[in-house]
Length: 205
Image (cartoon, rainbow, N blue to C red; front, side, top):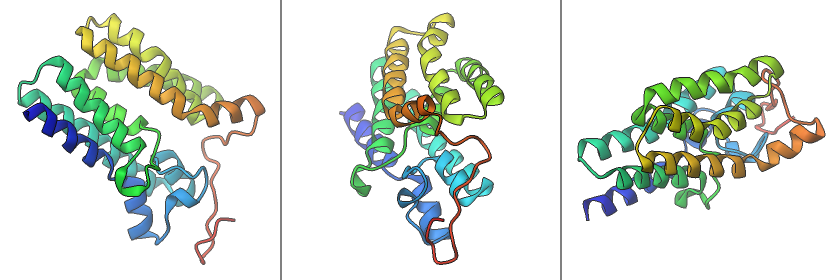
């Protein structure tokens, strides 16, 4: 029963998007109406700036981290620890409070990884940063990190359910990046440093 309530809590917590809150209460806009129409940190960075992007990253990452830490402190089985992590990602990607229109779950997944295994987190981040440094495509780094995650989790000898979680998280991340993959193929994906401009009236330029 405790596991069930934690999963509900995880989904509801995940359904609170940092990007939306920062955009709405600092700039008076719904971030989902601008740029890539996404509530994640990358779109916030490009649309509103570095500070807002960083705050969104921390906010959304903390959601994943705190859920995993609560599950571990409660001494739940590995399966329920992982289900709680999946619940917070699902909440972030498809938030019940915001018409099921959320982010791509990368920042939240990062928070979960830190909670589960900081070694896996560091390794995946380093690997994911390589294509970003070379190409300036943040989405390519996210996709690369998602692809290698299950293999890195296996490399460090983590429990079976952690591997299942890594595979599920990888699949969800790739699915959520399908539009980015299409733009990468077409050569229309925006690079790191390219920003969307918002006029004083709140309209995207």
